[in-house]
Amino acid sequence: MELKLWAVASVVAAASVGIAPVQAQAQAQAQGTQQGRLSNDVLRIGVLTDISGVYADISGKGAVEAVKMAVEDFGGRMFGKPIEVVSADHQNKADVGAAKAREWYDAGVDMINDLANSGVALAVAGVAKEKKRHAIVNNASNVGVTNAQCSPYTVHYTYDAYSLANGTGRAVVEGGGDTWFFLTVDFAFGIGLEQQVGDVVRANKGRVVGAARHPLGTTDFSSYVLQAQASKAKVIGLASTGNDTINAIKAANEFGLTKTQKLAALLLWIQDVHALGLPTAQGLQLTNAWYWDMNDETRAFARRYQQRAGGQMPNMAHAGDYSSTMHYLKAVQAAGSDDPDAVSAKMREMPINDMFAKGGKIREDGRMVHDMYLWQVKTPAESKGPWDYLKLLKTIPADQAFMPLSQSTCYLVKR
Image 1 (cartoon, one colour):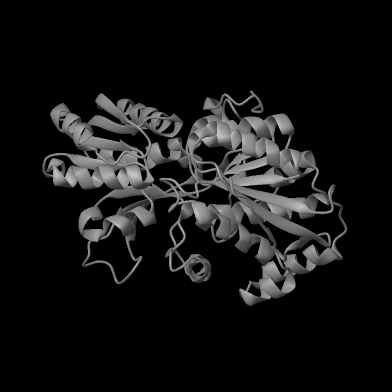
Image 2: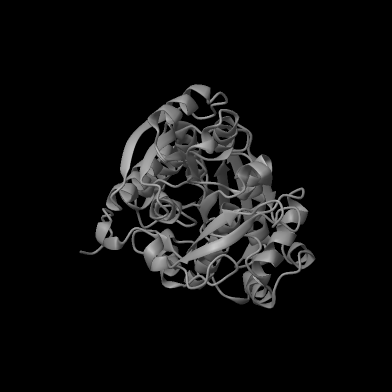
């Protein structure tokens, strides 16, 4: 498995990207003006992601770039010592991800970020708990990260299946979509998402009439679409993401399913909309934590990222990778050391106010709570240009977006 390493240059690199005054202050502190100590004379961050598989476009090299941006903006050094970024491809295999995490932690990696793929994220969370090292999940949805696999060292940052279900799922049900059939990718992510949305459907007096599960990376959806049509459900819930969702939507259009039934894409990314095109994707509703064109801060970050990422706009996970890396670095700085327990305490103590979230807070179970947003894909006539794809339908407040602590099974939650 290929391993890449960047020893991130400090002041010159950070100055070249035009960082904000508050980041410049953090940069100065990172150069050694604040006293602190690192256990290995270096701070290492690993980006464990899908570089070559079905989720490469929504995570992959873009996730690595976002983490590198955060390290550079911080100043590239901690207490006068270098911050290094390593990356690897987990190949969407939980055992490969867990083995790489174990190898990295044993070699001195302090924090692992991104973790696209729920199976991988759950496996790495278990290793993080065992090794007492940090893991931040930005690109996986399974709520087990902050329940069965919770620990003081793992944070679920950007979104999860509960927030998607209470966004897109609830909106579709409330709009009259009271019978559902699911096309579900057959591993922890899809199964968990189907369960969470199904719970929302039933809680709102709707019915789930069936499901068809397909392997990760399916290209021929014809048999699954025919099962969905035969169900006569009002709504076909796509409990998948990335290329799986793109291929399912294309097949649904080809077979005429969308003429009589409604598609609910439960985890749709801006890259998916870009790949589908507005004529095909228009009207789809989606729940995201972040969109590049929300305000001046998001647009400024997006333009910088786009210049580095070959013209691609960042999605919510890329923004989460950046934000969570910066939050981790600030927590190390505030703790005065890279001691995992001290850093965990600071991460939960410090609020998150940046271009990704305002008033964000990491709970005791490791869930970072923040507002979520329900969007609708624009029509071609509504779009003003490339990447102008979404319009806001609804803001979902942080206290409603995520699973309440009263429902948590995390052992860290005080009863």
